[in-house]
Amino acid sequence: MNPKLRKLHDLGQSIWLDNISREILTNGTLKRYIADLSVTGLTSNPTIFEHAIGHGHLYDQAIADLARQGESEEAIFFALALEDLRQAADLLRSAYDETDGVDGWVSLEVSPLLADDSVKTIQAAARLHAAARRPNLFIKIPGTPAGIPAIEESIFSGVPINVTLLFSREQYVAAAGAYLRGIERRIAAGLDPKVESVASLFVSRWDVAVKEDISAQYHNRLGIAIAMRTYKTYRELLASPRWKKLAKAGAHPQRLLWASTGTKDPAAPDTLYIEAFAAPDTINTIPEKTLLAFADHGQVGEMMPVDGGYAEAVLDEFRREGVDDDALAQRLQREGADAFSQSWNALLSRIREKRVQLAGKTPW
Image (cartoon, rainbow, N blue to C red; front, side):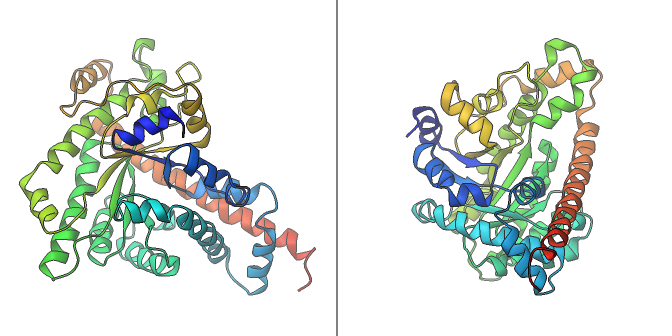
């Protein structure tokens, strides 16, 4: 067991892998990460699957078989993704069982093209959850304005949700409110209040967005400050009378998840966001390259302060540099949704190309 990652695990932070492919399932890599690197969960997105499906031939036979059955590109993708994620969920099932459902999760995203349609998002989340046939599979819904009511309704319906594309404290508060309302409605209806959820705050994109507009001394500081401010609000929510009432009824907290934690600036330490985000009752979903880097030379320092530490002072400095963090958070969420839609279209195009290529090699 890697001592650095074990230390994060022991202080109460879950380490999840931000990657999936059929290759890491079949060659034992994921199993080894679980055993050696304290990995207790896994996340995916359209970009990750586009890379996995488009490179190599491990998916070719399945694509050919599904195409022969007349399935659409979207249906083919979900069939492939669910097959991979079921295998990953089974590998992580012991963590799920040992933590009473708090840990041991994998995630599958609804179509990003539904980001502005609450009703269709609710329907898609319910359909994918039923198709997964695994208790430890989250459905990812973006925390966009249209996503918030879909999150509440999905939680009320008993669908475990990973809220994605959150960029600020305010967006996190909206997602947390949706989760709380969903649980409160379940209690009022006499239903089990234990429906799991995580809220994913994206970090590194903040620093990429402002790099060209600020002085060099401020590089790679904004994302950490936003995270610290959000963590303070998260801890305050867990200490609130409203949450304590739900916890007493048997609900589990919606945990805060650090996302987009791979360092984008080659001049910065490759373990920057892992070292900065050591915090109990949180999750860090880490790109494979960053996970291996931290296992090799990362350091676990002080835990993130529950009072926000120096976050507000840093944010004031950025405002003096001309950064409007409220406006930027909204822009980053829109751009994130657009980027996932582009990745989704690229993914379906890649599957379309594959089925055409395979049609010439496979007897129909």
